[in-house]
Image 1 (cartoon, rainbow, N blue to C red):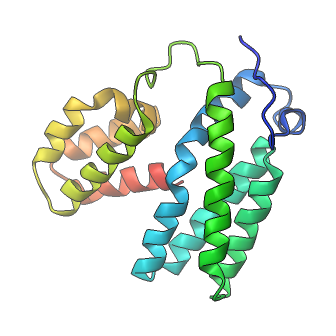
Image 2: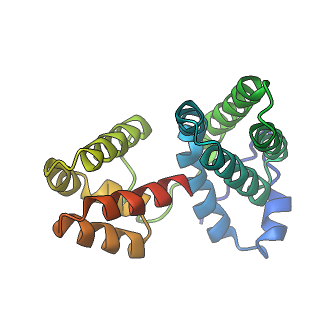
Amino acid sequence: MEDLQPVEGLDSSEALARLGGNRSLYLKLLHQFLEQESVPSRIQVHLTRGDRLDAERMAHTLKGVAGTLGVGALRKAAAELEQAIRLEDPRVPEQLAVVQTSLSDLIARLRPALPPLPGHPAQGVEPGQREEVLARMDDLLSSYDSDAQELFETHRALFQVVLTAEDFAAFQAHLSQFALDEAQQVLRQAVMS
């Protein structure tokens, strides 16, 4: 397995100690962490809708992920955002901007430093395309549109990357039974957790 190059803001030794020295798990988690780039914008969507609890939960999850991976500055920023949301602090937009900047900057440094995962089906899937497909799927599920099945078939490999094997099977089953509310629930929990 290729080694991870040093990345500013990422304490790999602390994270590896927390993960019992499991380097392959750490690399897998770092690859999954790249998917967190849209979290601040999703938090903003929840806040705009008045879903403060979901926004707070997402900030809490980001804080935990950052802590596990050894990203101290992001963990601190996410913790401050979580508390600001909980207290309905008027500085929430400022805190969210700090999280967005911290996360984007780290991912920009991390992405080129990460060695590829062996046999990873996500290779060649652009992050922007991923977000576009997931947003389109969410829209189709919300409007009970049967095109959701076609979108799923077209981007099956992408959904296999985004979802765990268990969630993928459940999502596929719900879609085939046209249980779109249930499919949407599986997708949202997987993407936002």
